[in-house]
Length: 358
Image (cartoon, rainbow, N blue to C red):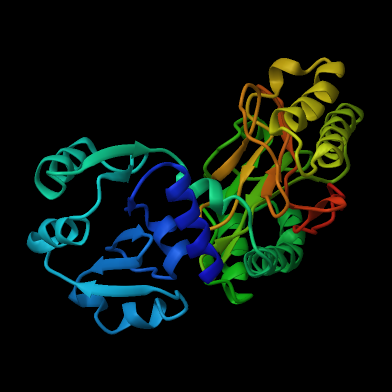
């Protein structure tokens, strides 16, 4: 936490700001450890101050104890503006998270809280820092991934019983929670047969049948950190067409993982996966980006797609998830969460990629 605090102070100074008002819950948690539902943080070169309400009077100081120069203030909502204004009275330029704050909140802060200051819109200032994970963060993500690996292994054979998508999702979710996860990483996707051609299909009462391609996209949460993994199965044996479909995506994913290194543009990794799929004649069937960052949020920086300017750095944790979706036939997506190390990319998700459930 102390290292994160200094990185934030340095970023504020480099942006020619005197202070930053932080309202995004995951940014607050990353900087302070506070995970309550109501919080606002002011950070400047004097330290970090968390404002919250009386529900967190006992909890907030405990969660902030690892931040070197932090304090918590329990305050009524009606008094929050005047308290923030008093704290920042000697500041000239104050940053405000433009990606999170509503227009009404901005107007209130600009015209009532910080009347004498210049309020400056900031974008992804903390999120950019969060994109480089420390060892403790990676360990939590890997622990969440391990729980999913075990849970999926324990229920995968149930596909032979031809459950509905919803029934299989419920079994998998229960196994994840029984395995020690604090929560699911996100709503589990189970998409079978023609539904597997829908990238973000929600499980239904469709019965999984022999010969179906079945996409399972699943994650877990540990201490606020999430994992994300997708595997595609077939009930029985792959047909010749399904095998070509599946192996193309496998090859695309491997090409992208091989390209994922410190200093490499994320668009290059997207292009590596997309090239394999394009060469197979399915360029138009790969309809989304190749990946995204994972951490306290299931989708965070960096973005891994065409026409983006993000770059991998040491400690970046991001998914690699190419897919090919053939309408009316089915889809294949293979996804691993990886961390960038000095030697390249290391997979944190480890479930085998054998698709056949025999």
